[in-house]
Length: 489
Ligand SMILES: NC(=O)C1=CN([C@@H]2O[C@H](COP(=O)(O)OP(=O)(O)OC[C@H]3O[C@@H](n4cnc5c(N)ncnc54)[C@H](OP(=O)(O)O)[C@@H]3O)[C@@H](O)[C@H]2O)C=CC1
Ligand SMILES: O=C1O[C@H](COP(=O)(O)O)[C@@H](O)[C@H](O)[C@H]1O
Image 1 (cartoon, protein in one colour):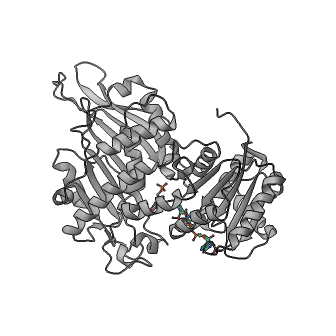
Image 2: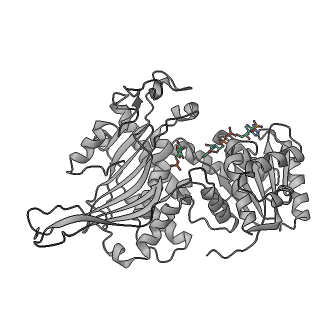
């Protein structure tokens, strides 16, 4: 059980009228309030360009939490919310925010603790950070922390530029780069599965593991985000951040403690150990894909190039599969396969660890055997499965596969739990489950190299049908090593 400690802070949300704020942030703040992590000593300022009074803003917040809130708490909760119309590109309006922040600091006894949440398009991040400093919003006696959404840059150069701009106002310890995968229950469970189970940790190396697979498959297409996605693609949208974060947590060395500095150091060491491929082998190791219309239902499942706000000649990848390798002592020789894509046959987010079998087979010829496999399912269900072989009951010495599985709890895709966790962690100053700059930079270095390699010899797209398991080339990638993907369904 988490000990309930009351947090004291002013939370300023830039983009306070936007989709993220309404769907995720206000419900997450409400849950922290309902659980007692926020009580009297907190206030929230929402800010965006449109004109709203405090009263109207409070009504919007109340409606965003209506389905989860205890009705008798709503008015008391929303009374902590304030709104100021503010164009982030206008220097003058930061003065209005400064005055209100100082006033609320006194009214609610906030000790000068400030969290700034940038829930806006990334093009504004640099300017906001610079103005927060120049207009005095970060000059308080308490703590000042910045929560920032993805994408963190478009490539290494733009990420570096953004990081430098943020550095004008915040040091690395004050920047909380959100990767919502790190807030997922089963991703956080990876550390417990490994480090609380010596039996598993003893096998966690190239002597015993044959291959590792990380799958972030989506059934959905780009929905109404075609404009953003067509400038991004699967490598930037999912690989550079979520996949590499999961891989680094999964394969890092045993940390001295679970302290954020130790975990970060081990994650960075793991990312550094990943081989950055030579340009001429990128295409052998990383497969781009783009979905085409589903041949049996092309109206419902149209081609990516026919999606709204997507160029009809787009070469943006909606899928990527790849083989990562590490030159660390622990992982040298173990292929780490990753894949992510949109419009695949079904939603499946999992980690699969297949163990080696180099022992002679002592059992009857009629035996059926399965490779010992550990499957950590993150979505659509949360579960852990271990595949084993056991004796067929009765006479003879034949084996058959079986599995040990924890209860498979369905994940509520709309639950704001991940944001509740990340906001709570930020309020208590725990940056363990956020991305550190060194991790971001190393991840971009790898992603940039893959793009460069793809550009040199482009793959013909589209190359998989909407609703399928992805491009054939992704299956061939594993077949060359004598492996197969763990089934998506
Ligand atoms: N929505 C989601 O589920 C997720 C979003 N994200 C990220 O979160 C961020 C926000 O996304 P989302 O909420 O969907 O975006 P929206 O477009 O819904 O919201 C953008 C917000 O920014 C405000 N805004 C725009 N221009 C200005 C300006 N010049 N000055 C002040 N305010 C401005 C808008 O209000 P107004 O028009 O009134 O100014 C609005 O409140 C993005 O970085 C996105 O990538 C990440 C993961 C999930
Ligand atoms: O960050 C993103 O993640 C979602 C998938 O997240 P999940 O929690 O539903 O697995 C993806 O759809 C989106 O394109 C990407 O920006």
